[in-house]
View 1 (cartoon, one colour):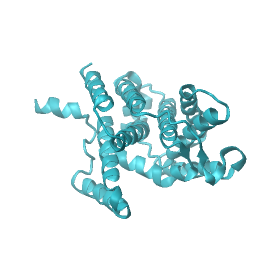
View 2 (spheres, helix red, strand yellow):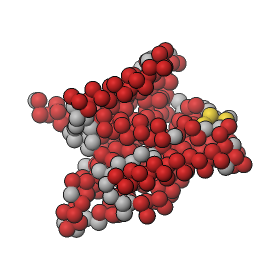
View 3 (tube, one colour):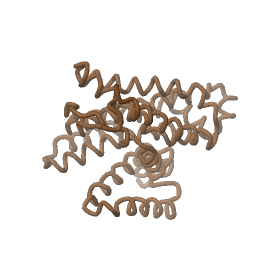
View 4 (cartoon, rainbow, N blue to C red):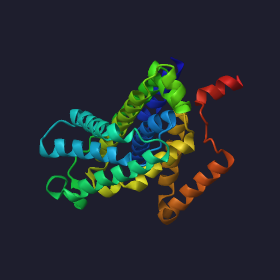
Length: 297
């Protein structure tokens, strides 16, 4: 309960604090990146399955919402939900054959699947306009709406991780064989984690389209997928609050160093190297931030 109150207070501060247009844009991007990173963390951090293709689910959400709102006149709110559900459907279809893979094999498969989805969007010009991009999207992603969705999904995520299914995810991550012997349906648990993580990324992609008012396949390439996974490792595998802190920190660093854009990726890589050297388990490891305060107290 205290955790939910803290999240709500943070959300009210982000939504109501007076800001200029540039600061509002940073907050919107931070919320979008945190939502996508939470999705990747559900799969990678809490089941141990590394993925390098989740930007494709962002692309599916973004294009589904854009096409529904621009071409078919659907209201943006149900279109955003439809974008998340489209990502869930494709993730379920992809997960049926690929979740049987273990170790690094799924990560390799996710690269190919993510690039395949991007190339389909890039070459299906009659429907997605291809590499030219999709313009004319309504600017429905305001600061208040982005913060509301982020806090709503964050509260849902933390409560989900404390549920029976969340404990199943941790058990399958720590020892899948032992979890199966205890009666857990490990394949079904991993499928639930994959579809839920795809839903988060689909929603994030839909919000990104509403913020940029323009999307194109190159925005959701392998580099974006790698950034999402790196943020999860940066924050700490198995720590959702660490993922949120890491994503927020990386977003702020990348935005405030925009004036020296040619060095931004160098700074980003250097920061990751420093964290991996001095904190190989990530910012918070497998603990949540309130666990640290409780232990210190």
